[in-house]
Structure formats: structure tokens, C-alpha cells
Image 1 (cartoon, rainbow, N blue to C red):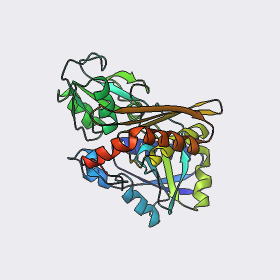
Image 2: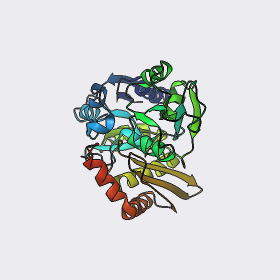
Image 3: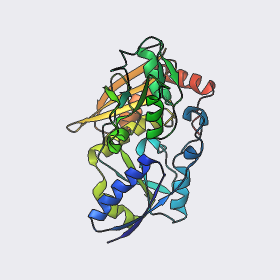
Image 4: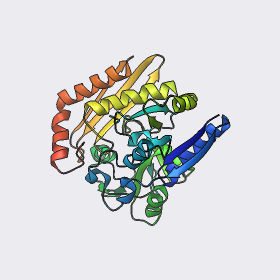
Length: 309
């Protein structure tokens, strides 16, 4: 049996994820210790994520701990991991996926459609903002930062008529009381990798990789690899208005891709089936670029939103 050191952010959700992996490892007879690491993204709390422009802002310091051999593995929300890992690292396991969809949370209103004209909606995601504005151009979108409890408290205090969050985080924390609508992926395409955990290790650490092998879910690996290939083709990080959602239908992968302008005036969607995750993601990404996605993304970056590093 192995002794495993896990590096994790200190947020409530990050700790849930780390404790979840800890319990699974302990169930196999391994011993585990946890080191909490504060990341750049945790330190910058008063600026919308899209304006920060730092690639890997929730992962950099944890990766430094891996390099320095202070920890053996890092548990991430996969959507926070850059699509191109540094050569020092590899993703040893991608866990069985939670619901990848976004959810509409509100105290007073049952769905996006039922929001009054000019309602105030909180989200710091350009991807969510773009898709909201595409279906409800009247909505006023406001930045929303903080951990899950902070965001829900701001909603309950009346700062917003509604907020948009990931279903996975709320489900994991058991904080679904204000969820009014699970937004279908065809209305709001999720972020690449949303709902999955990625476990990162030092490249070539065969011992840790072997310890973690039982956590790797084949379907989650295939679908998220496909989504991340699309994101990589478009040159985007986790804060740009790009969506990607892949599903397995037998041996076939069905991929939905999205590029949108944050104001919702330009929304490109593309769907395709394939068997090779990386090739499918590349092809759909290239098609989106060819259809005008390159112009949309240039406008986004030109407007001072987050630049991919």
C-alpha cells in the first residue's frame, strides 16, 4: 500500500473533491495526507475571472508543489486545468463525471424564461453570459465571484434575481435548494471538462499512476479529451466564451461545440459524431474557426477580456 500526499485548493468545493478522492484511496488501503495550497485565483477575488488573463490561475501553485515533490498528486476540477499541460505533468485519472450542465438558481423565479425584463443575473463566465444574452438580450449580467456559499448568500440577500452555477459543484456539496432549472446543454453548452475531476501527477511517476488507475473512467476520459481538444484548437482557456459537451453513444462520441460573443449577438454552434476524441475535437474546433469563430475570439481578446497565454 502507498502513502499519498494530495495538494488541493482550500475552497469548500476543492476540499470536498480532495476528501472524496482521499476516501476512495483509503478504501483501497492507502494512507493519505492533504496539503492545502492557495492559488492565484484564490487570491484575486475582486476582479471578474475573464479580466484576469492568467492561464492556470487555479493550478500554478499546486503544480509547483508537485515539481518540488511536496505532494504526489493534485485534484482539480478538470475545467480549471489548462488544455496544454507543461511537460512535467500528466493527467493520471479522470473520474466518473457528475452532471456537466449549468443550473439556474433563484429565490423568486422558476426559470430563465420567467425572469422579468431587465433582471439582474450573476455570473463571471463569459460562456454563460453569451448564451444568456443570446436568448434574453434584456438581462443585465453582473460579475459574481466567491465560493459556492458566498455566491448563494449574495443571491439570497437579493443582490441578484438569479445566478448561474455548475450543477456538479452544487450536487457534490448538497446545496441544491435554490436550483430551479437544470439548463439543457443545447441551450447552454457547458465548459469543456465541466463535472469531471482531473488528477494530475508528475510525468513518469509510474507508482502514483498505478495507485490511481482504478479512478480513471473510460467514458469520462474519452468525452473530456474530446472537449479539451476542441478548446485547445480554439486557443481558449477556461474563461473564454467557448463551450464543449461530448456524450458517448455506444462507441461513438457526439460533440457539441460553441463559440459566442459575450454580448450574445454572435453564437456559433457545431455538432458532429466521431470515434477518435482528439480528431473529433480538432475537426469541430476548426469548423467553428472557419465559420467565423476566429473573428469572434479576436474581438473578445481585443476588448480586453482574458488572453490565452
